[in-house]
Image (tube, each protein chain N blue to C red):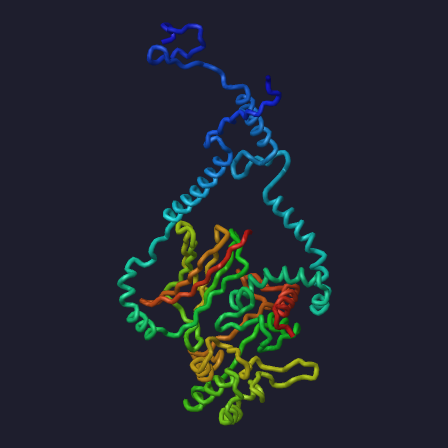
Length: 174
Length: 304
């Protein structure tokens, strides 16, 4: 007697693991994450600004002495930077710094320099000398080439001493 | 080479290397040739229409008569045409009327911002926030008054502060006492009675006012009469960083005193005046610009 129903299940052929879209998607995801990580590691090494001070250890040992001698030499000048807002990439702006002594009289320095540091890419850093506009007042006209964060440092040098004022700015789209 | 060509009739150039490696004289693809001729045609048409070939000092003018300067001038004319109605309104309205009209005020502020950047920001800061030695324009502390009329007067005629150098008039102890008294009031105190006595006895009140607030007379309409002397009772220093040293310096050497090298320099140029530039009379700012700047400064936050 023949059976009218066939209950025998044909075993389906197992898909090889590497053909399964789920496995492939997961592998793809992991590879993407790894690739992004590797890119960042590469960029971090490639654009690392490195140590700012080469003799950091010796300076650290002399820290207290340096601070005391600096305090003793500090003439109590007031140095104020005027960085116009909003800053826009590629748009030239006038950036000024004004220096007065303890009594409020303008003072001239030997040299005033404008530094712009790009925290994420040392190759984009730039520095410009500032022009004396009036006694104690210095000007630089410049623009920032890229949008995003920049660290501005204005340093005034007179003899051996250097005074600086810094500010972190955000440059917007033009 | 060609006479013993091993591959005759093949359209090769006769250059054969390594027995059978040869250069064929195939024409470039049709699309490439079309592009080639089209670009040549473009150059010919372009040089006929636009200024192109340098001939002597000039270039050939081109049939269209286009010039760069003309395009620039057209652009300027377009901008001027847009600004025209606003400028015309500003010229016939008073500053008070302009402030009352929100649309016109917005235009005036945008226009004056550029003027402020060119003429004022070097001393008073890009946002009117002042600089050490240069007064803040964005607060409500005014040396010569913060009304529209007073601001206009200041921009037009400039200002020159004046304070006697007291170094030769007062004893060092008296100068120190006055400087301490000024610092005390700057820090919120009422000022010690001896200081007040000295202040009046030495005639400081002639300029700084009876209340030492820089006001000589208060008029019924709220306007004040002053000679530009600083208010000594608030926490604002006319000459930063302020403090005892700074106050003593000002009292000792005065402001704008001829023959005193250490004197304070406090001069604002007259922007309505005429200056000689290459023997030509040039007015720094015209009435329209002064009106706009007056409104801008008034609206910086401290206008009265």
